[in-house]
Image (cartoon, rainbow, N blue to C red; front, side, top):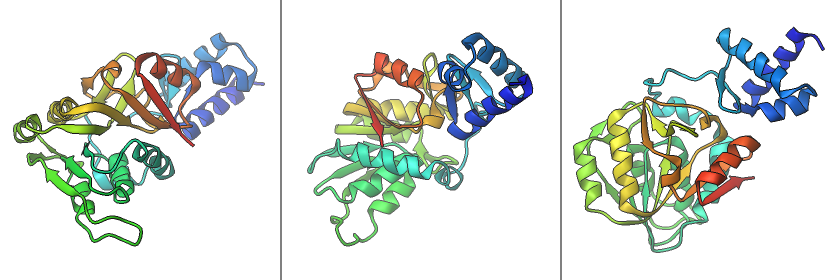
Length: 260
């Protein structure tokens, strides 16, 4: 196979899957890991992908760029729905549940409309709106919703000192966190400084913390770290996550769930 052809196939795999490990690429293309690393370095120099520890990811946005809720909602919809279904199984009737802002947590909120007697704490305007709409057949009455207040971001999150102060007084059984990125070194990250502070307060308010993130978040690094991977109890992701990424997650996080 010519070098150009091999690199084209490497790039196609990364763009299709979002993130691919060196081991997987070497196996798929039947070449050495060293050859794949050289290919990834060349493609990264050309600005076609991002080389990360153990593999590569599709080209990332700038670390401080924050995309709006509607734009993010259109991405990886099937994966988000699958993740939400698995995450909802962790919730029992009568629980108090914290939901951070985000499109994956919004998908989870839809699933939670089927769970009775929930109290939901959130800093997300779209989630609060969703939970206040009349129930459809098979759904429960709208959950009790506590909206934190705060300064509104581009992704319709409420953040800052008001949100942090509200969360400091609350106690949740479970909190679910959507993130901009996950990385072995940077941990869980976001482009927004105030959102990081608010997410930390949400994690502190819960007995157990669950990250809900699709495979494209692996290797993505936002401007600021929320917490290291070791400070959450569960990660729920999809089967697009590479084997190497899952290995790292299982070393750092007590429970890792892969949605079918």
